[in-house]
Image (tube, rainbow, N blue to C red; front, side):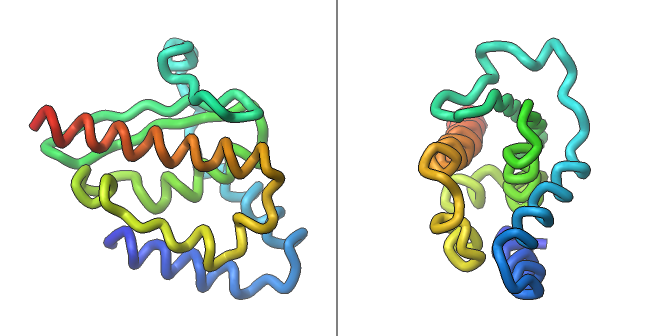
Length: 139
């Protein structure tokens, strides 16, 4: 599936919920899809600056396709990462670097995250895109 197809799928899933408490619960449920990041990857070089919680993201290149691994010490943030991973993981680096992540606005996430969580979420997106750009530059 393409990045936009996955985003559209997520938007449809969120349309099933009437209030944000249900959406928060769904985001938290998403955290279960993430595999635990090995301890050796939980280091300062993989730590995302600007997050209220501790968040680690790594990226691997396989012929221009990016595979991310991520984890957090906070369950809600782990769910947010899981949503990003669902959209961006195993996608071409060039598509990630230029992706318009419109699902964030469409599901109302910007309005319903605290300012510190929203800043952290943007930091995660920025780092994932930077990894993709770095991969493109090294192809």
